[in-house]
Image (cartoon, rainbow, N blue to C red; front, top):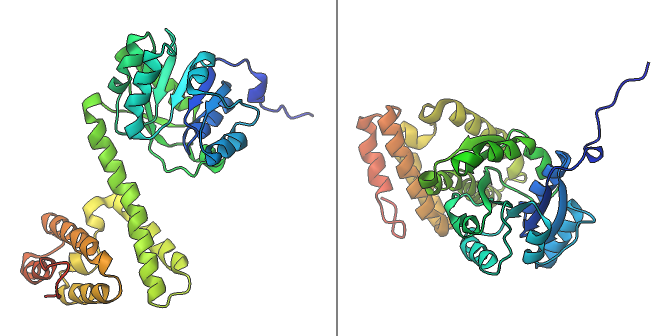
Length: 306
């Protein structure tokens, strides 16, 4: 008995031709994911050698052309450029007549909603803001990571279903974000993800300084558990010397950091103060223990430990 095989997406008729303006870490990955859903990447633009190489790996046989030519060929255009470059790019494409009426124009900026696409809207395009809440490597592994990834979606009400459908086709989970809430939404993600990388890199550096041969192996289980606990329990997951009010230990930390890595002192004190505030509000840090601790944390980051 022959077991039926699921149809190959390449055998299905393509529904949208897809173009990418900006072959950074995000655009080619999203286009490759849409290709798996039956859409057809037709053009990509990129400038650097890295972008060209990335596009060739993720979107083989898709021609590398100018941004205007991408818009000329595609029904759905993904604008995947840095946030600060997005407004100027949209205005330029609209002013030069590159935008076609009825064309879907989607950007992946977390900072902006659909309003940044108003120049394209006035030219007749259909504006979508589709921001994947994911860190990207720009490799094929990212396509798999999109499964279950939340996307911050903003679009005109009449395009909401279309925007959410595209996210679902990429394997993501659409999360509606109001236009005015986009900067706050993006700040939250940057605070959690970008600063996490900095904290982990600093912790690994200090462990190497302390003689730990494999700091990644030491931190992996600890940080994994801390993240899981924080996502499950919020402030109730706070542990460690700050949450306990262990002022002597915190003072020793600050002394060691000043001796071995003075550039990290300000960040340590800032995060410890924020942790103390949350621990006090939650009741984990007892007020009787907080005074000495806050005295240590109130010291000058450049000066001697108190």
